Length: 250
Image (cartoon, rainbow, N blue to C red):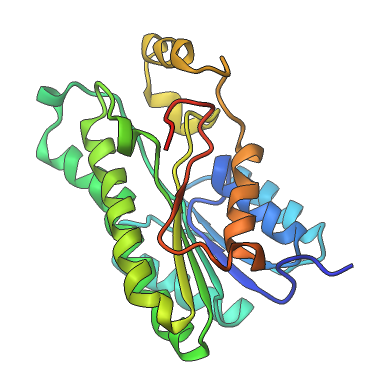
């Protein structure tokens, strides 16, 4: 029985662990060949690549800092050489760090924006022309429920993720008539290494706010990406889906 993404070629940024890794493997389970990048996580990359191959799919694992423009272009070019034209782009790579607003210097702010927002724009710029020519494409941007809610100690992160949602909506309007559907996922707190930069006090406060009384798992976010990438998502345009355990009601 064919998977929902049979014959598709997907590129996932930040795909060696966490949400990106879960999405990459879920795509392969549905029949997609997958290229993913990581930033110095060879062990995680090997594990995800092995899982993708176990589904009989092609894979490319590529080390890349998504804030490095030249590295991004190399990753994109190599992905299309190995897999063929990219049908599905998942902008997942991100960083986080808890810091009081007054302690965030401009370099830290710029780095947060470069990785979490500017890279989303850059990858979309690389993806859109060929998707437009073929008349089909899916761009899925990983935002955060904190883009809506805000959070103490994460002003730079919240700003970047709010920008991801705004960019998603603008691109959706501009690209939909060419067959490119752009949507976002805004997860709640998920058990990933990204949260290592948060204090125990911050995480405990958040845990106590959640009606479900637990953080999510990457495997609980990946099905939303599969939906948006497959024919089941054909009527989603400019939407932000938010599996968040009840942290935000949208």
